Length: 349
Image (cartoon, rainbow, N blue to C red; front, side, top):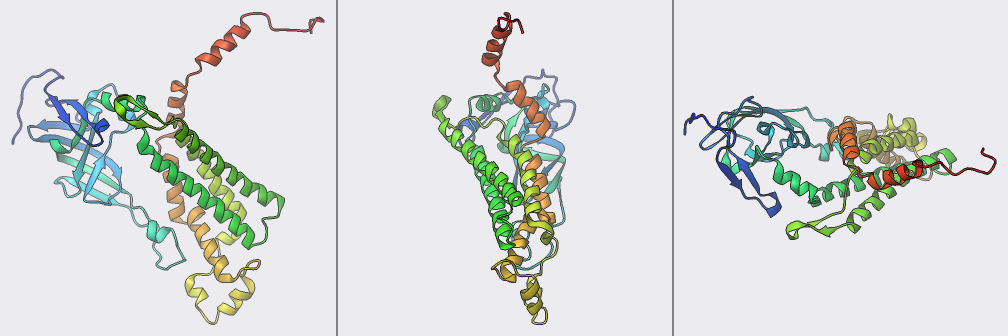
């Protein structure tokens, strides 16, 4: 519809976008020709124009581009933007990475082949974002208020996903230790026990989140605080992967493939020399293939990088956690304690 030029103050007309559930509705302020250009280059009557790059998975006909926690706290309102857009929008280019699992087969790559989650970089070159696709623009207040009120139930699915991953790694480590006859060794049992501890701690934390559930403002149910949980898993996940490697040993590197198991010339040697303790070569090799996809393969390492950065920069998250952590009560007690001479014996020692 063309470009309309006018001299306006930063606060122009008010826009409102309704979303479901109701807590996600937004009120935005329209501003003509903002500067600097990123991430919103300029506005048209029908839309907002965008110049930017973004990492996102190419998995549907429409891609959501949410507001990051960093941008939500920016003082400059021109960095506040969240929207959804069709993947075939004019001016948008998508760069996909190569697959992390390139081998076909069943048990050779039980996780990498069927569950390879594609990653991609989105390039926005003057892409027209229709107003009915804009969720938030220039004003992050509604979103920040919802977070402050504890509207966090969307994170529950991620907590469940993490718990399943921890249970999977712990179970695989236990089964491999049994298959090669080392679970009774003190140092091996201690490593698997450490993995069990992390899994149980996460389970207890989830129970605490459920126990803290409450009715928030506006009648919306909210879970208890999840502060620090993503930070905890970002560092715990790497430790669990390392423990799985240590329990499994060098067998992670060399295991027969499905083609090897089906080779009549090789099979007698595999059955004799590559079997486990009371388990055959098929069971042991397939179990190790699963561990390989968790702790060694390109798919497993991609997943580990994802787990570390999924919740954002862990260092930034730790700093934000510290800044928001209420220590007023214990600080007052300590200050009261050190405000007078400390108790001591009659001897003065």
